[in-house]
Image 1: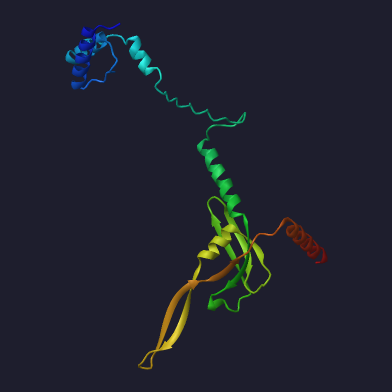
Image 2 (image 1 turned 30 degrees about the vertical axis):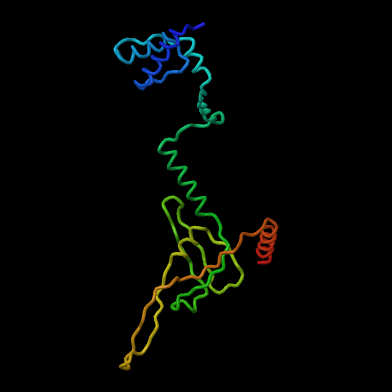
Length: 209
């Protein structure tokens, strides 16, 4: 059992340690308190090994463990990189695939200079996709499919619309406004059954011809 003298000394050392800003437990022993004070007063000295009491104070502190990310798994034989030639080839294949994707549309020509045209051949090309050429009918109510690369080209085309008006002094003045050359109605893609029916109709039409 701790004597009254030891209790008093322990209390004095604890209060001194707290006044020095040291983090100590109020039940720390005299030796531990004295060692902490000495270490603070002489920082160049190597601190004493932790006592069993200190170990008991820290053994319940939570420990955060960061899991190591699993290494990516690749199928056998799959390359982890591409050469420059392989990358360019892959880009060309992807570009051609996207350019050739069909879009179901109904197109109306808004260009007054082409109001009597039944349709027009459109030719579009790119370094990746190559050249596409297709006849676009202007006066057809039945929707049809066009490659996406041609759809994107038509969507961006403009034409000039001229409006003649008279000014207050009686002279004619021409107002010019740039508008979209084509009004494009994009329709939902056909279902599998509808595509099968369309192929059969086209086959019958070719056979009849």
